[in-house]
Amino acid sequence: MRIKSLIAIGILSSMVLTTSCKKSSETTKPEEKTGYQGQGKSPVVPTVDKPIQKQWRGVWAFNDSTTFFSNKFDGARLNGVANDGNDHYTIWVTAENTPINVSPWYAFQVWSEKPRDITVQLNYQDSRSRYYPKISTDGRNFTPLDSTRFKAINPGEGEFGIEAAPESAELTISVTENPTWITAQELYTSSVVQEWVDSLSQKPFIENYPIGLSKEKRTMYLMEINESKDSKKAIMIISRQHPPEVTGFLAMKSFIETISGDSELAKGFRQEHTVFVVPLMNPDGADNGHWRHNMGGIDLNRDWQNFNQPETRNIRDFLVEKDKTYDFVFGADFHSTWDDIYYPIDTTVTGKKGKIIFDWIEKISQRLPQKKTNLSASDEIDPTMVSSKYFYVHHGMPAIVFELGDNTSRPFLKEKGNVAAEEIMKLLMEQ
Image (cartoon, rainbow, N blue to C red; front, side, top):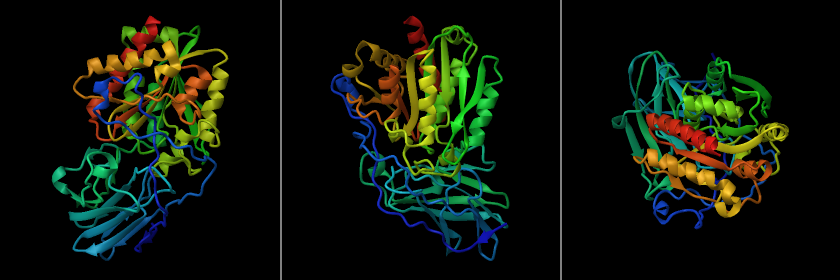
């Protein structure tokens, strides 16, 4: 076991926010403008490779080698540790490169030869504390840290988003001789996602196969859900372009499980529609504990115009080929942000063809009135740059970026994914 007791801190430059779609006055009802309005217009950014900081992986030992911290596992992000005395430790978390969206992912293990409570302070360079910590004793099952063991340091003065986030946070952790995982969100690395894909693919009408390699040569897998070889209509679903966006993945997971289920609605839908799913668009970023980017140092959801990155090229090439035999009637890209929000393309652009997206949103809202989902439509489709615009412009499918809140409850994420699947199946079957 390699032991390291000094501090390892990456040197980073300043960070800026990346953004999504603009608001629309054409399709957004007045009452829908009162909630979270999302982030502003997406800036056009270069998507050619940029250098990244690949973190050192190993074990930090303290207190005469009785207390240990580690980032030697897939999905880890830990760039430095210092022992401040009196069982207080400072953790440094830095991004893979900059500028970058403020989404400071962290994930580490800690253990001790003697059971006791320790305090860990999370610090980020040029960022604030966005993700509430999750804790696990097996690396698979995570729960939020008890609120009595969380202390915000220098809370933000804003009302929402990064302006409201604390500068850092102190966590009280009960450590034993067995490792405890502390993470920003649940760990869904490429191997964990593939286990889910393989399990679902036991159904006779589902297969999964490789469609290309990532920047770091990981295999990208696609699920094909198809109960009738005669079906000529198709939908395209993708998720996890941004590694920390686990809540979007969880909603997508429920969405696909519902479409793959045993209900009469699902069975009928699968007779007429083929579903293509890429559940993990950025396997390198997920396994390397990135905040946002792939191993090319690029935000993949800005590369749907120039296709400089292999991950987006893999989907483009797949769609170009499938478009020869299928009519794509719906597309969705699942993400996460500060609160639940839909980013559709305005019907002033899509016309009647895109109305199904807004009908779908209304149906979901009617069935789930307990939590408001915000809406911010865009009336710009040039440049395509983001997935939903590329899906619509080049493949004619009504498409949406479907974002779930970082802290949306996990049972509700599952329910929302289920309801969203049921309602889109109904609408598409009516066409």
